[in-house]
Image (cartoon, helix red, strand yellow):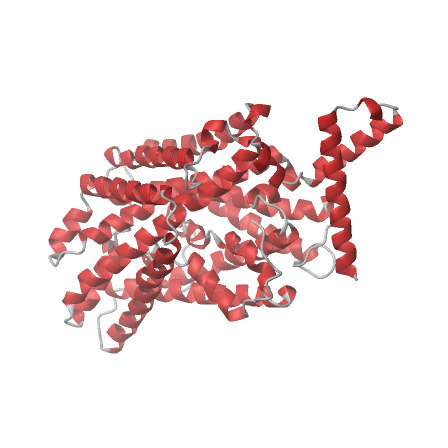
Length: 532
Protein backbone atom coordinates (compact mmCIF):
# COMPACT_ATOMS: atom_id res chain seq x y z
CA UNK A 1 0.00 0.00 0.00
CA UNK A 2 1.52 3.28 -1.04
CA UNK A 3 1.65 6.25 1.27
CA UNK A 4 1.06 9.73 0.00
CA UNK A 5 3.93 11.84 1.21
CA UNK A 6 3.30 14.82 -1.03
CA UNK A 7 0.29 16.31 0.73
CA UNK A 8 2.45 18.47 3.01
CA UNK A 9 0.53 17.24 6.07
CA UNK A 10 2.67 15.48 8.66
CA UNK A 11 1.59 13.56 11.74
CA UNK A 12 2.97 14.60 15.10
CA UNK A 13 4.90 12.06 17.16
CA UNK A 14 2.12 11.87 19.75
CA UNK A 15 -0.62 11.49 17.13
CA UNK A 16 1.18 8.56 15.52
CA UNK A 17 1.81 7.03 18.95
CA UNK A 18 -1.93 7.16 19.75
CA UNK A 19 -2.76 5.68 16.34
CA UNK A 20 -0.46 2.77 17.17
CA UNK A 21 -2.26 2.29 20.49
CA UNK A 22 -5.68 2.31 18.81
CA UNK A 23 -4.50 -0.25 16.24
CA UNK A 24 -3.28 -2.72 18.87
CA UNK A 25 -5.20 -2.39 22.16
CA UNK A 26 -8.15 -4.71 22.79
CA UNK A 27 -9.64 -5.63 26.17
CA UNK A 28 -10.98 -9.08 25.35
CA UNK A 29 -7.66 -10.82 26.13
CA UNK A 30 -7.11 -9.35 29.60
CA UNK A 31 -8.65 -12.29 31.53
CA UNK A 32 -6.15 -14.73 29.97
CA UNK A 33 -3.28 -12.86 31.61
CA UNK A 34 -5.01 -11.92 34.89
CA UNK A 35 -4.51 -15.57 35.90
CA UNK A 36 -0.79 -14.86 36.26
CA UNK A 37 -1.19 -12.08 38.81
CA UNK A 38 1.76 -9.66 39.15
CA UNK A 39 3.91 -11.78 36.81
CA UNK A 40 1.56 -10.85 33.95
CA UNK A 41 3.46 -7.54 33.83
CA UNK A 42 6.62 -9.51 33.01
CA UNK A 43 4.93 -11.24 30.07
CA UNK A 44 3.54 -7.98 28.68
CA UNK A 45 6.92 -6.25 28.93
CA UNK A 46 8.80 -9.25 27.54
CA UNK A 47 6.50 -9.56 24.53
CA UNK A 48 6.71 -5.81 23.88
CA UNK A 49 10.52 -5.92 23.83
CA UNK A 50 10.96 -9.07 21.73
CA UNK A 51 7.96 -8.67 19.45
CA UNK A 52 5.97 -5.40 19.50
CA UNK A 53 8.88 -2.98 19.05
CA UNK A 54 10.83 -5.16 16.54
CA UNK A 55 7.66 -5.65 14.47
CA UNK A 56 6.95 -1.93 14.32
CA UNK A 57 10.53 -0.96 13.40
CA UNK A 58 11.09 -3.69 10.79
CA UNK A 59 7.71 -3.02 9.16
CA UNK A 60 8.54 0.69 9.05
CA UNK A 61 11.78 0.07 7.16
CA UNK A 62 10.09 -2.28 4.68
CA UNK A 63 7.09 -0.01 4.17
CA UNK A 64 9.29 3.03 3.51
CA UNK A 65 11.53 0.99 1.21
CA UNK A 66 8.60 -0.01 -1.00
CA UNK A 67 6.33 2.99 -0.42
CA UNK A 68 5.64 3.37 -4.17
CA UNK A 69 4.87 -0.29 -4.82
CA UNK A 70 1.74 -2.27 -4.01
CA UNK A 71 1.49 -5.55 -2.16
CA UNK A 72 2.33 -4.93 1.50
CA UNK A 73 3.70 -8.09 3.12
CA UNK A 74 3.40 -9.88 -0.26
CA UNK A 75 5.88 -7.37 -1.70
CA UNK A 76 8.21 -7.45 1.32
CA UNK A 77 8.53 -11.23 1.50
CA UNK A 78 8.31 -11.73 -2.27
CA UNK A 79 11.27 -9.43 -2.93
CA UNK A 80 13.40 -11.49 -0.52
CA UNK A 81 12.14 -15.05 -0.97
CA UNK A 82 10.21 -15.16 -4.23
CA UNK A 83 6.59 -14.70 -5.26
CA UNK A 84 5.49 -18.11 -3.96
CA UNK A 85 6.62 -17.36 -0.40
CA UNK A 86 5.24 -13.83 -0.69
CA UNK A 87 1.88 -15.31 -1.60
CA UNK A 88 2.09 -17.54 1.47
CA UNK A 89 2.67 -14.46 3.65
CA UNK A 90 -0.34 -12.50 2.36
CA UNK A 91 -2.44 -15.68 2.48
CA UNK A 92 -1.59 -16.17 6.17
CA UNK A 93 -2.40 -12.54 6.91
CA UNK A 94 -5.85 -13.04 5.41
CA UNK A 95 -6.65 -16.51 6.75
CA UNK A 96 -5.61 -15.76 10.33
CA UNK A 97 -8.08 -12.88 10.42
CA UNK A 98 -10.75 -15.27 9.13
CA UNK A 99 -10.04 -17.67 12.01
CA UNK A 100 -9.95 -14.71 14.42
CA UNK A 101 -13.57 -13.72 13.75
CA UNK A 102 -15.21 -16.51 15.79
CA UNK A 103 -13.03 -15.67 18.80
CA UNK A 104 -13.78 -11.95 18.84
CA UNK A 105 -17.44 -12.61 18.10
CA UNK A 106 -17.56 -15.07 21.00
CA UNK A 107 -16.59 -12.14 23.19
CA UNK A 108 -19.35 -10.12 21.52
CA UNK A 109 -21.89 -12.86 22.26
CA UNK A 110 -20.84 -12.89 25.91
CA UNK A 111 -21.28 -9.10 26.05
CA UNK A 112 -24.82 -9.47 24.72
CA UNK A 113 -25.53 -12.13 27.35
CA UNK A 114 -24.50 -9.73 30.12
CA UNK A 115 -26.95 -7.02 29.09
CA UNK A 116 -29.40 -8.49 31.61
CA UNK A 117 -29.46 -7.55 35.32
CA UNK A 118 -29.28 -11.10 36.75
CA UNK A 119 -25.60 -12.16 36.87
CA UNK A 120 -26.39 -15.85 37.45
CA UNK A 121 -28.71 -15.94 34.44
CA UNK A 122 -26.23 -13.90 32.36
CA UNK A 123 -23.35 -16.29 33.15
CA UNK A 124 -25.47 -19.31 32.24
CA UNK A 125 -26.51 -17.71 28.95
CA UNK A 126 -22.90 -16.75 28.13
CA UNK A 127 -21.84 -20.37 28.71
CA UNK A 128 -24.55 -21.74 26.43
CA UNK A 129 -22.87 -23.03 23.25
CA UNK A 130 -26.02 -22.83 21.11
CA UNK A 131 -26.67 -19.20 22.10
CA UNK A 132 -23.05 -18.27 21.40
CA UNK A 133 -23.03 -20.09 18.04
CA UNK A 134 -26.22 -18.38 16.86
CA UNK A 135 -25.03 -14.91 17.91
CA UNK A 136 -21.58 -15.40 16.34
CA UNK A 137 -23.03 -16.44 12.97
CA UNK A 138 -25.78 -13.80 13.04
CA UNK A 139 -23.41 -10.90 13.74
CA UNK A 140 -20.80 -12.10 11.26
CA UNK A 141 -23.17 -12.57 8.31
CA UNK A 142 -24.90 -9.25 9.01
CA UNK A 143 -21.48 -7.57 8.97
CA UNK A 144 -20.62 -9.39 5.72
CA UNK A 145 -23.79 -8.26 3.95
CA UNK A 146 -23.15 -4.68 5.10
CA UNK A 147 -19.56 -4.89 3.81
CA UNK A 148 -20.84 -6.14 0.43
CA UNK A 149 -22.76 -2.89 0.05
CA UNK A 150 -19.51 -0.95 0.29
CA UNK A 151 -20.96 1.58 2.74
CA UNK A 152 -18.68 4.54 3.34
CA UNK A 153 -19.85 5.02 6.90
CA UNK A 154 -18.18 1.78 8.02
CA UNK A 155 -15.07 3.87 8.69
CA UNK A 156 -16.99 6.22 10.94
CA UNK A 157 -18.47 3.27 12.85
CA UNK A 158 -15.02 1.82 13.45
CA UNK A 159 -13.72 5.08 14.92
CA UNK A 160 -16.76 5.58 17.14
CA UNK A 161 -16.70 1.91 18.14
CA UNK A 162 -13.01 2.08 19.14
CA UNK A 163 -13.75 5.02 21.40
CA UNK A 164 -16.96 3.63 22.91
CA UNK A 165 -15.98 -0.03 23.05
CA UNK A 166 -12.24 0.04 23.85
CA UNK A 167 -10.71 3.33 24.96
CA UNK A 168 -13.43 4.47 27.39
CA UNK A 169 -13.96 1.00 28.96
CA UNK A 170 -10.17 0.54 29.34
CA UNK A 171 -9.82 3.87 31.15
CA UNK A 172 -12.89 3.12 33.27
CA UNK A 173 -11.61 -0.36 34.25
CA UNK A 174 -8.27 1.06 35.41
CA UNK A 175 -9.97 3.89 37.35
CA UNK A 176 -12.36 1.41 39.01
CA UNK A 177 -9.42 -0.74 40.09
CA UNK A 178 -7.64 2.24 41.66
CA UNK A 179 -10.81 3.44 43.44
CA UNK A 180 -11.57 -0.10 44.67
CA UNK A 181 -8.15 -0.58 46.26
CA UNK A 182 -8.04 2.96 47.71
CA UNK A 183 -11.44 2.38 49.37
CA UNK A 184 -10.18 -0.74 51.14
CA UNK A 185 -11.62 -3.34 48.76
CA UNK A 186 -10.28 -6.87 49.15
CA UNK A 187 -7.42 -7.63 46.75
CA UNK A 188 -7.93 -11.12 45.30
CA UNK A 189 -4.65 -11.07 43.37
CA UNK A 190 -1.91 -13.25 44.87
CA UNK A 191 0.84 -10.65 45.22
CA UNK A 192 3.29 -13.28 46.53
CA UNK A 193 3.91 -14.49 42.96
CA UNK A 194 6.15 -11.51 42.26
CA UNK A 195 7.16 -9.90 38.96
CA UNK A 196 9.15 -12.86 37.64
CA UNK A 197 7.04 -15.94 36.78
CA UNK A 198 7.71 -19.60 37.56
CA UNK A 199 9.06 -20.70 34.19
CA UNK A 200 9.37 -24.32 35.35
CA UNK A 201 5.62 -24.85 34.79
CA UNK A 202 5.83 -25.27 31.03
CA UNK A 203 2.12 -25.93 30.45
CA UNK A 204 1.24 -22.57 32.00
CA UNK A 205 3.20 -20.61 29.40
CA UNK A 206 0.76 -21.17 26.56
CA UNK A 207 -1.56 -18.41 27.77
CA UNK A 208 1.40 -16.08 28.08
CA UNK A 209 2.31 -16.78 24.45
CA UNK A 210 -1.11 -15.45 23.46
CA UNK A 211 0.16 -11.98 24.43
CA UNK A 212 1.92 -11.93 21.06
CA UNK A 213 -1.49 -11.89 19.39
CA UNK A 214 -2.44 -8.88 21.54
CA UNK A 215 0.39 -6.97 19.85
CA UNK A 216 -0.23 -8.33 16.34
CA UNK A 217 -1.21 -5.86 13.65
CA UNK A 218 1.46 -3.25 14.38
CA UNK A 219 3.00 -3.97 10.96
CA UNK A 220 -0.04 -2.29 9.38
CA UNK A 221 1.07 1.03 10.89
CA UNK A 222 4.33 0.91 8.92
CA UNK A 223 2.56 2.63 6.02
CA UNK A 224 2.66 5.88 8.05
CA UNK A 225 6.45 5.95 8.40
CA UNK A 226 6.74 8.69 5.75
CA UNK A 227 3.89 10.73 7.25
CA UNK A 228 6.04 12.15 10.06
CA UNK A 229 8.77 14.77 9.88
CA UNK A 230 12.30 13.37 10.10
CA UNK A 231 11.12 9.70 10.16
CA UNK A 232 14.54 8.30 11.13
CA UNK A 233 14.26 10.13 14.47
CA UNK A 234 10.55 10.67 15.10
CA UNK A 235 9.13 7.31 13.98
CA UNK A 236 11.10 5.31 16.60
CA UNK A 237 10.04 7.87 19.21
CA UNK A 238 6.36 7.37 18.27
CA UNK A 239 6.84 3.60 18.42
CA UNK A 240 8.40 3.64 21.88
CA UNK A 241 5.78 6.07 23.26
CA UNK A 242 2.93 4.06 21.73
CA UNK A 243 4.41 0.80 23.01
CA UNK A 244 4.76 2.21 26.53
CA UNK A 245 1.13 3.41 26.58
CA UNK A 246 -0.04 0.05 25.19
CA UNK A 247 1.88 -1.93 27.84
CA UNK A 248 0.56 0.32 30.63
CA UNK A 249 -3.05 -0.15 29.48
CA UNK A 250 -2.63 -3.92 29.31
CA UNK A 251 -0.80 -4.22 32.65
CA UNK A 252 -3.10 -1.90 34.62
CA UNK A 253 -6.23 -3.37 33.00
CA UNK A 254 -5.08 -6.90 33.82
CA UNK A 255 -4.30 -5.93 37.41
CA UNK A 256 -7.74 -4.29 37.72
CA UNK A 257 -9.36 -7.63 36.82
CA UNK A 258 -7.04 -9.54 39.16
CA UNK A 259 -7.95 -7.27 42.07
CA UNK A 260 -11.66 -8.06 41.85
CA UNK A 261 -11.71 -11.73 40.65
CA UNK A 262 -9.80 -14.66 42.24
CA UNK A 263 -7.46 -16.39 39.74
CA UNK A 264 -9.29 -19.72 40.16
CA UNK A 265 -12.58 -18.11 39.08
CA UNK A 266 -11.29 -16.34 35.97
CA UNK A 267 -13.08 -17.27 32.74
CA UNK A 268 -11.51 -16.26 29.42
CA UNK A 269 -14.76 -15.12 27.82
CA UNK A 270 -16.78 -13.83 30.80
CA UNK A 271 -14.38 -12.34 33.34
CA UNK A 272 -14.10 -8.89 31.78
CA UNK A 273 -17.88 -8.41 32.12
CA UNK A 274 -17.92 -10.05 35.56
CA UNK A 275 -15.11 -7.73 36.68
CA UNK A 276 -17.12 -4.67 35.71
CA UNK A 277 -20.20 -6.15 37.41
CA UNK A 278 -18.27 -6.70 40.66
CA UNK A 279 -16.85 -3.18 40.65
CA UNK A 280 -20.24 -1.61 39.98
CA UNK A 281 -21.82 -3.70 42.74
CA UNK A 282 -19.07 -2.58 45.17
CA UNK A 283 -19.82 1.06 44.32
CA UNK A 284 -23.61 0.44 44.41
CA UNK A 285 -24.11 1.40 40.76
CA UNK A 286 -25.13 -1.99 39.35
CA UNK A 287 -27.37 -0.21 36.85
CA UNK A 288 -24.17 0.63 34.90
CA UNK A 289 -23.40 -3.03 34.10
CA UNK A 290 -25.73 -3.33 31.08
CA UNK A 291 -24.36 -0.04 29.76
CA UNK A 292 -20.76 -1.27 29.75
CA UNK A 293 -21.90 -4.57 28.19
CA UNK A 294 -23.55 -2.67 25.34
CA UNK A 295 -20.43 -0.50 24.93
CA UNK A 296 -18.17 -3.55 24.68
CA UNK A 297 -20.55 -5.14 22.18
CA UNK A 298 -20.43 -1.97 20.06
CA UNK A 299 -16.65 -2.18 20.11
CA UNK A 300 -16.77 -5.76 18.84
CA UNK A 301 -19.29 -4.95 16.11
CA UNK A 302 -17.24 -1.97 14.94
CA UNK A 303 -14.07 -4.04 14.85
CA UNK A 304 -15.68 -6.83 12.87
CA UNK A 305 -17.23 -4.39 10.38
CA UNK A 306 -13.80 -2.91 9.79
CA UNK A 307 -11.96 -6.22 9.49
CA UNK A 308 -14.50 -8.23 7.48
CA UNK A 309 -13.52 -6.48 4.26
CA UNK A 310 -10.08 -5.17 5.28
CA UNK A 311 -7.57 -8.07 5.11
CA UNK A 312 -9.44 -9.64 2.19
CA UNK A 313 -8.70 -6.55 0.06
CA UNK A 314 -4.98 -7.34 0.13
CA UNK A 315 -5.28 -10.89 -1.13
CA UNK A 316 -7.98 -9.75 -3.60
CA UNK A 317 -5.54 -7.27 -5.19
CA UNK A 318 -2.75 -9.86 -5.30
CA UNK A 319 -5.17 -12.43 -6.72
CA UNK A 320 -6.09 -10.14 -9.62
CA UNK A 321 -2.39 -9.97 -10.52
CA UNK A 322 -2.63 -13.67 -11.42
CA UNK A 323 -2.31 -15.49 -8.09
CA UNK A 324 -5.94 -16.56 -7.59
CA UNK A 325 -8.48 -18.17 -9.97
CA UNK A 326 -10.94 -15.78 -11.67
CA UNK A 327 -13.72 -16.95 -9.34
CA UNK A 328 -11.98 -15.21 -6.41
CA UNK A 329 -11.39 -12.04 -8.44
CA UNK A 330 -15.04 -11.21 -8.98
CA UNK A 331 -16.50 -8.11 -7.37
CA UNK A 332 -19.97 -6.63 -7.18
CA UNK A 333 -21.20 -3.29 -8.53
CA UNK A 334 -19.72 -1.50 -5.52
CA UNK A 335 -16.28 -2.95 -6.34
CA UNK A 336 -16.30 -5.13 -3.20
CA UNK A 337 -14.59 -8.54 -3.37
CA UNK A 338 -17.89 -10.46 -3.29
CA UNK A 339 -16.75 -14.06 -3.77
CA UNK A 340 -13.83 -13.82 -1.34
CA UNK A 341 -16.19 -12.46 1.34
CA UNK A 342 -18.66 -15.30 0.73
CA UNK A 343 -15.90 -17.94 0.96
CA UNK A 344 -14.58 -16.19 4.07
CA UNK A 345 -18.06 -16.36 5.61
CA UNK A 346 -18.33 -20.08 4.86
CA UNK A 347 -14.98 -20.71 6.58
CA UNK A 348 -16.11 -18.74 9.63
CA UNK A 349 -19.31 -20.79 9.75
CA UNK A 350 -17.41 -24.11 9.62
CA UNK A 351 -14.98 -22.98 12.33
CA UNK A 352 -17.85 -21.81 14.52
CA UNK A 353 -19.33 -25.32 14.39
CA UNK A 354 -16.33 -26.46 16.48
CA UNK A 355 -18.55 -25.42 19.39
CA UNK A 356 -20.18 -28.82 18.98
CA UNK A 357 -17.00 -30.83 19.71
CA UNK A 358 -15.29 -28.57 22.25
CA UNK A 359 -16.20 -29.06 25.93
CA UNK A 360 -16.94 -25.38 26.62
CA UNK A 361 -17.18 -21.94 25.08
CA UNK A 362 -13.88 -20.84 26.57
CA UNK A 363 -12.07 -23.98 25.35
CA UNK A 364 -13.30 -23.21 21.81
CA UNK A 365 -12.21 -19.60 22.28
CA UNK A 366 -8.74 -20.68 23.41
CA UNK A 367 -8.03 -23.25 20.69
CA UNK A 368 -9.02 -20.87 17.86
CA UNK A 369 -6.98 -18.11 19.50
CA UNK A 370 -3.94 -20.40 19.55
CA UNK A 371 -4.44 -21.40 15.90
CA UNK A 372 -4.63 -17.71 14.99
CA UNK A 373 -1.39 -17.05 16.90
CA UNK A 374 0.40 -19.90 15.11
CA UNK A 375 -0.58 -18.75 11.62
CA UNK A 376 0.16 -15.07 12.27
CA UNK A 377 3.57 -15.93 13.76
CA UNK A 378 4.58 -17.83 10.61
CA UNK A 379 3.96 -14.62 8.66
CA UNK A 380 6.04 -12.64 11.14
CA UNK A 381 8.90 -15.15 10.93
CA UNK A 382 8.92 -14.64 7.15
CA UNK A 383 8.82 -10.84 7.55
CA UNK A 384 11.77 -10.68 9.97
CA UNK A 385 13.87 -13.04 7.83
CA UNK A 386 13.03 -11.04 4.69
CA UNK A 387 14.16 -7.76 6.25
CA UNK A 388 17.60 -9.24 6.94
CA UNK A 389 17.95 -10.82 3.50
CA UNK A 390 16.93 -7.61 1.70
CA UNK A 391 19.77 -5.72 3.41
CA UNK A 392 22.07 -7.82 1.23
CA UNK A 393 20.07 -8.58 -1.92
CA UNK A 394 18.87 -4.95 -2.25
CA UNK A 395 21.65 -3.20 -0.35
CA UNK A 396 21.72 -0.17 -2.67
CA UNK A 397 17.97 0.45 -2.63
CA UNK A 398 17.15 3.74 -0.81
CA UNK A 399 15.71 3.31 2.68
CA UNK A 400 14.01 6.55 3.83
CA UNK A 401 13.71 4.90 7.24
CA UNK A 402 16.60 2.66 8.22
CA UNK A 403 17.27 0.63 11.37
CA UNK A 404 20.83 1.69 12.15
CA UNK A 405 22.59 4.52 10.36
CA UNK A 406 25.49 2.40 9.18
CA UNK A 407 26.04 -1.31 8.72
CA UNK A 408 23.57 -4.13 9.35
CA UNK A 409 24.37 -4.95 12.98
CA UNK A 410 21.39 -3.16 14.54
CA UNK A 411 18.98 -4.70 12.03
CA UNK A 412 20.35 -8.15 12.79
CA UNK A 413 19.73 -7.47 16.49
CA UNK A 414 16.20 -6.01 16.10
CA UNK A 415 14.93 -8.43 13.41
CA UNK A 416 16.75 -11.35 15.04
CA UNK A 417 15.13 -10.54 18.39
CA UNK A 418 11.72 -10.43 16.72
CA UNK A 419 12.38 -13.71 14.88
CA UNK A 420 13.51 -15.57 18.01
CA UNK A 421 10.63 -14.12 20.06
CA UNK A 422 8.13 -15.21 17.40
CA UNK A 423 9.70 -18.67 17.21
CA UNK A 424 9.48 -19.09 20.98
CA UNK A 425 5.82 -18.07 21.02
CA UNK A 426 5.14 -20.39 18.07
CA UNK A 427 6.53 -23.40 19.94
CA UNK A 428 4.72 -22.54 23.19
CA UNK A 429 1.40 -22.14 21.38
CA UNK A 430 1.20 -25.91 20.82
CA UNK A 431 1.22 -26.65 24.54
CA UNK A 432 -2.27 -27.22 26.06
CA UNK A 433 -2.89 -24.65 28.83
CA UNK A 434 -2.91 -26.01 32.37
CA UNK A 435 -5.61 -23.56 33.53
CA UNK A 436 -8.34 -24.49 31.04
CA UNK A 437 -10.25 -27.68 30.35
CA UNK A 438 -9.63 -28.08 26.63
CA UNK A 439 -10.99 -31.61 26.57
CA UNK A 440 -9.02 -34.33 24.80
CA UNK A 441 -5.41 -33.46 24.07
CA UNK A 442 -5.86 -35.42 20.86
CA UNK A 443 -8.47 -32.93 19.70
CA UNK A 444 -6.28 -30.01 20.80
CA UNK A 445 -3.17 -31.15 18.91
CA UNK A 446 -5.19 -32.36 15.92
CA UNK A 447 -6.91 -29.01 15.40
CA UNK A 448 -3.67 -27.04 15.75
CA UNK A 449 -1.35 -29.29 13.73
CA UNK A 450 -3.78 -30.28 10.97
CA UNK A 451 -5.11 -26.71 10.84
CA UNK A 452 -1.58 -25.31 10.34
CA UNK A 453 -0.69 -27.91 7.69
CA UNK A 454 -3.85 -27.32 5.66
CA UNK A 455 -3.57 -23.54 5.81
CA UNK A 456 0.15 -23.47 4.90
CA UNK A 457 -0.07 -26.07 2.10
CA UNK A 458 -3.15 -24.50 0.43
CA UNK A 459 -1.39 -21.40 -1.02
CA UNK A 460 1.41 -23.55 -2.47
CA UNK A 461 -1.16 -25.70 -4.27
CA UNK A 462 -2.92 -22.59 -5.58
CA UNK A 463 0.40 -21.07 -6.68
CA UNK A 464 1.43 -24.25 -8.52
CA UNK A 465 -1.95 -24.33 -10.30
CA UNK A 466 -1.62 -20.80 -11.73
CA UNK A 467 -2.57 -20.21 -15.35
CA UNK A 468 -1.89 -17.22 -17.61
CA UNK A 469 -5.65 -16.72 -17.90
CA UNK A 470 -5.82 -15.87 -14.18
CA UNK A 471 -4.22 -12.48 -14.76
CA UNK A 472 -6.42 -9.42 -14.91
CA UNK A 473 -4.46 -7.28 -17.42
CA UNK A 474 -5.34 -3.96 -15.75
CA UNK A 475 -4.61 -5.20 -12.24
CA UNK A 476 -1.38 -6.93 -13.30
CA UNK A 477 0.01 -3.63 -14.65
CA UNK A 478 -0.46 -2.02 -11.23
CA UNK A 479 1.89 -4.58 -9.68
CA UNK A 480 5.44 -3.60 -10.57
CA UNK A 481 7.85 -6.50 -11.15
CA UNK A 482 9.99 -7.70 -8.25
CA UNK A 483 13.61 -6.50 -8.35
CA UNK A 484 14.82 -10.00 -9.18
CA UNK A 485 12.38 -10.12 -12.10
CA UNK A 486 13.87 -6.89 -13.47
CA UNK A 487 17.37 -8.34 -13.12
CA UNK A 488 16.29 -11.53 -14.89
CA UNK A 489 14.62 -9.58 -17.72
CA UNK A 490 17.66 -7.36 -18.15
CA UNK A 491 20.04 -10.34 -18.33
CA UNK A 492 17.74 -12.14 -20.75
CA UNK A 493 17.61 -9.07 -23.00
CA UNK A 494 21.40 -8.74 -22.91
CA UNK A 495 21.83 -12.40 -23.78
CA UNK A 496 19.33 -12.10 -26.64
CA UNK A 497 21.08 -9.06 -28.06
CA UNK A 498 24.45 -10.75 -27.76
CA UNK A 499 23.11 -13.77 -29.65
CA UNK A 500 21.73 -11.52 -32.36
CA UNK A 501 18.19 -12.53 -31.59
CA UNK A 502 16.80 -9.17 -30.60
CA UNK A 503 14.88 -8.87 -33.83
CA UNK A 504 13.11 -12.18 -33.27
CA UNK A 505 12.03 -11.54 -29.70
CA UNK A 506 8.35 -12.06 -28.99
CA UNK A 507 6.47 -8.73 -29.02
CA UNK A 508 4.99 -9.37 -25.56
CA UNK A 509 8.43 -10.18 -24.11
CA UNK A 510 9.84 -7.05 -25.71
CA UNK A 511 7.02 -4.93 -24.27
CA UNK A 512 7.58 -6.42 -20.83
CA UNK A 513 11.31 -5.75 -21.08
CA UNK A 514 10.69 -2.17 -22.16
CA UNK A 515 8.43 -1.66 -19.17
CA UNK A 516 11.10 -3.11 -16.88
CA UNK A 517 13.80 -0.85 -18.37
CA UNK A 518 11.43 2.10 -18.07
CA UNK A 519 10.76 1.24 -14.42
CA UNK A 520 14.50 1.05 -13.74
CA UNK A 521 15.08 4.37 -15.53
CA UNK A 522 12.32 5.96 -13.44
CA UNK A 523 13.80 4.59 -10.22
CA UNK A 524 17.26 5.85 -11.20
CA UNK A 525 15.80 9.30 -11.88
CA UNK A 526 14.08 9.33 -8.50
CA UNK A 527 17.33 8.45 -6.73
CA UNK A 528 19.26 11.16 -8.56
CA UNK A 529 16.59 13.74 -7.68
CA UNK A 530 16.69 12.57 -4.07
CA UNK A 531 20.48 13.04 -3.96
CA UNK A 532 20.13 16.54 -5.42
